[in-house]
Length: 312
Length: 312
Image 1 (spheres, rainbow over the protein chains, first blue to last red):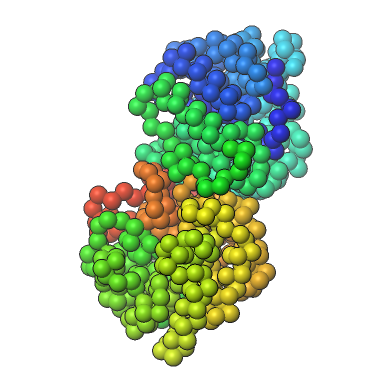
Image 2 (image 1 turned 135 degrees about the vertical axis):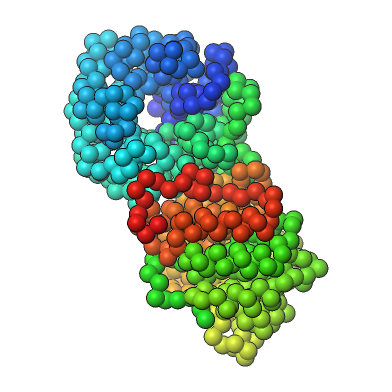
């Protein structure tokens, strides 16, 4: 089943740690440890988890158990199980494994797209079209999201024209994606740009405007999420312990830290459906599965404010 | 002289490291090292620096050279030299040393005020009144700011009623302060609360609504600054390397990190008047003066985005 709509929540926090986090670290987390981590996330109230990437195991040994992890996760109640698929072949495997939702990265930077997957953005839109067709055949209830990567800039080409980003997002929806979200793949985004781009995305795509996937590379992760929230974005990707997202240096987590993001929203009175105490507790199985790996996040260290809401 | 109004800037970043930072670390920075750090801050374009606290040297040996540091700083061009004064006696010393601006902390939490200075908030307002009178006598051009501390919550009493905060800020202005700012002393603030309180402050005090002094204890420092900016706040306190502000744990800086704050605004197209390259370079004299002290900030590690503006 997909996520439980009976949960009272104003935003959807989409936990990407088991995919984005684990594929960014050297160590491979044992499959059983992934199960325990997913259990803890679900117990905390997380309603969407990106659990795996369907790439060849020789490229990412951390993801060799992708099908097994999806099969486990879909048996947990109330959670939408997402899988990243880089191409049609990966999509077929993910669909056969039973994923509820696929996310396909499409880079708005031509330089990044060619360097990364040796395809142009337009080639990738054709891949989205092929995946959408396959989905229609095999599992029409499955949602397909296009994640427009390098949407806020690129380490190779620098500036990525906003017109290109919006055009590509629209092309992906036209090709059959249910929604297009925007990713700050390299941590270049600033709040003004986030507002501008999500406003345009919403104006172009309406309810098919998707998630904000922000990074914390330069410390602006939460400020950028706030900016996206202000523009009506209601789905946010983040990673427990800030795992993944290409950290540059100790203390410099890549992905937005789930714990701090949940704290920000809950403190604002924006309901996430996630328990602060339990999401902090979910760090234990993560740490147990990746011994020695640094975890980020400031709320877990600082603790909750005195008198913080009864829900928590 | 006070700060140079010919500088093109949209916000004033008020660097508090030499006061708030240095008083929070165990080590005492040698006076000469403070001078070199202040030089580097001024060279980077910082136009306001809180350089010292006028407290008895037996309480804070790090600040024993306060008068000497003020006397040095006021000889630098284009910078407003601030001093924290906890009471009338400190104010007299700061005025005699030649400070351009005094900041007086007044806690909105009765519990915190009594525990910290053994005075009620109302007693502290009377101290503000006495300081304002002395200022009028000795140096009428000097500005006096009341910093309403624990304005967003308190580790002792938890919730601090918003009515109390606004009432106290208004009382300080009525007692002779030129402006009242709001401080998130313990890192409890969230963006909704920041917006609400600064909106009320501005509505109550108009142009006498002062600075936002936010902490990064739970990672929300920049998001809270963004929220304050949205409400029209144009002066922001921060600390180079995130020094000070009671860090709880490694990676958990207390004060908002100047380098990341400047990056956020400059990336948004909001002019700070500060050079990114030079403010990052100002970490060197800070580090040299405090060997072994951890410095925070993510932009210095990550570097500037490719193609980041010509100004920098």
